[in-house]
Length: 358
Image (cartoon, rainbow, N blue to C red; front, side, top):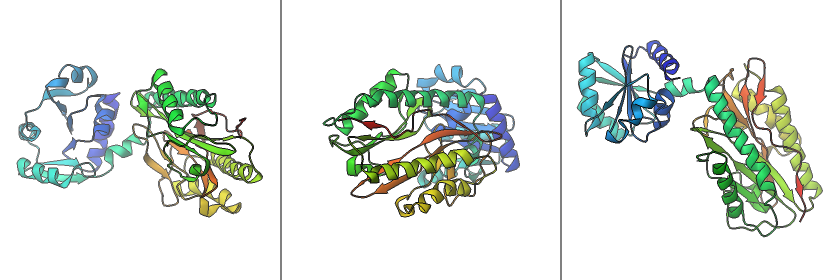
């Protein structure tokens, strides 16, 4: 795993004419090395690959980061970095400018002088956009846990049960299924609260004749899933049915036409044009989707502002919604893999309008 990813990083460094790269992001560190510990730094050159960590991980790190030389760093990690760069004759080193606070950058600059610090943005994140077979298999495990969780929670829904009680049952179930935790704070939003796109679970009891939106996911072996389904408790009105059917039409249309070579902007329009044509464009305020992987929000974005071209190996969500304040809202979301000739849907929970009796 790590050797292939290391080679991709070195190719990207060569293209940017970087002598060395200093990685501080915990997510990028795990992606590159396989090391799951909570502390560590990575330095890569054309010939060297080092993982610097502390005493706590000197047994674990060599077992996980087999393509890297593991070194226990000094109390001040900059001392070890300076020693290595001097030994290798490195005159400049790239750093993750989006991950390093200015105060830390200033300290690095002072202590590593005369080595030049070169700001780098999005290099490893760009590599992470393309999931390999191992990553896809892990994400499929995470999506399977989410699907099973949705099926499980349906039997727990009844008037009087609170949103937080449903959230807790979902999290317990995901952990029992092998998840290390939820991908993010689980959204359980019922009644008028379903009009809140990020309405995390509250103490509100489930009532009669109302939507419940569940937006949740599982972390499995470091990778996440992200699934949204909206159900109804009681007897839906014509308006409830209408907005559910519009969102479903939008989502199915997007899944049917999503393909490689399409920009994030074009993908977003697939869902947005349907909802706008039904007169609900102003009630759809977020983007159509986003990448997932080691993080729940990664590139690419399916957004009206994104010119990123979708390519095979990318894993994205497709999640249109309609939100009507004072009434309720609907969102339907699946995780999909971009393939050579289209997509493969990774989440499989039913999207039929589920109406639960009271």
